[in-house]
Image (cartoon, rainbow, N blue to C red; front, side, top):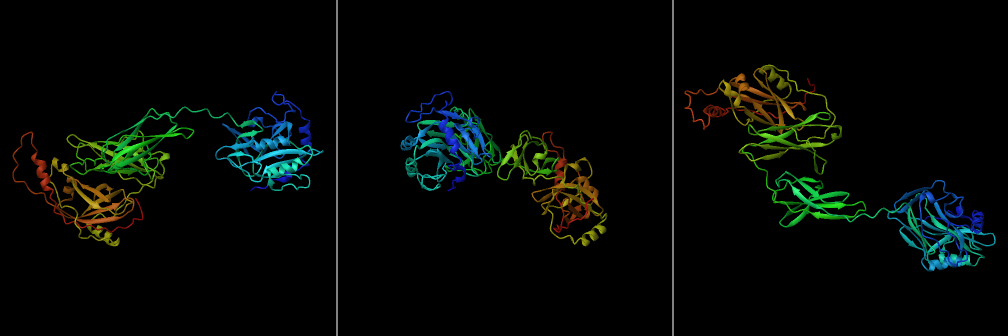
Length: 576
């Protein structure tokens, strides 16, 4: 319970005000008040912050005498009061105490605060005695919500009443009995007081049969919330985006919750609260619940029809992979694809992930996405869709990038040795040896000619350092730079062309891979065999059949390699 600041409501302080109340037989708002009426009948009024006058005013709604730090703010249907303000309505014609007691018995005195408001004290100022001494009555504890004053409520008073010392805690009925024993007791004002460090949102106050509303005009009544329709568009396929299409709603905002149904059991999907959702699960049916929300928090929910069961992504005859090449802030992200059939056409849809759900980037449908400052900290991915005649259309969703950050210094892994002898010394000094684990297949140098370029040889090399997006690859006996290749799902996708195999020549070689970011090094022994000699050309096939030369070239790619993989790495301290 917050104690009443009695010093601010002493009988001495209010003597002059009480006299002014008694002398003021004026007209409020142009309406004559009949003082002879046993019960004062006030007209129902609306009071705004602009209607609250300074504390020197003795009639009508005004501030108390010590409200320098007060705040008054109109809101629709309420007045927000702060700064320990005291708000009083000085009566033009004081109300006999017996009539006030009767209004309490008739439940005619009370106030209402808005939802979420802080508590407030009610106030009643009573003058009595030959000197018109004024004492302020107030509940012991502030209250919020809807309050109707009862005679049994615990109240206190600011100044002495006869022999009773001020601030005594009594029922309101007992306090009124003390005042009735005094000469000429009359109510001169009523109102509210805001506790220290609190804010009250006052809506209405009833007094002696009349009502007062506070604040701005109530918010206009909103039309009924109209629910529209929701349908799901998109292909019910694993990882394919499904979109909730809505029409006919008059809500201020819409919320989405996707759910899955399996064996008749419905479950909300955690984090699936955007308009677009892609399911990783197979065999489930997908639906979405749309909630319309209006400004007054009125809500209504409509569920969509269910999709057909989610089917797996169509598989290519060849495995296709995709990844994002990351350039960092103010740079670009590039979708890179490997292992798809020649002639595949690609389309792209970029998205970013907030740790819970994915968000499609509107209009980001190209191979390259240009980063903006707003993308700092986000993790990106891309849905790559490949189409090719006589193949099933397939989409692949990449993994997420690391969080976009400011660009690091540009680095490139250097390598010093030029010959096999220098390389062996270089590897020994770095603690790296060539082991005996085999690469996937042996290699054969193709026969010279235009068909050599058609038959690249893949040498996937397991790569354990997750910092590397690419590796630089060299082939020895004399240093031959093979190229820079991506690391996809922990495997360096190394590709040796027919020209490179022919340039290296038959014999024993060493393949060296250097991580561009980490500086890690791996070395593998590699043997290149001579291409077999074809004694006679194969008979020409019909124009509608297959060409013989590529088939012979494929046969020539039975590799005879005992490749040893070394998974020992070291950090390069300097970048070229």
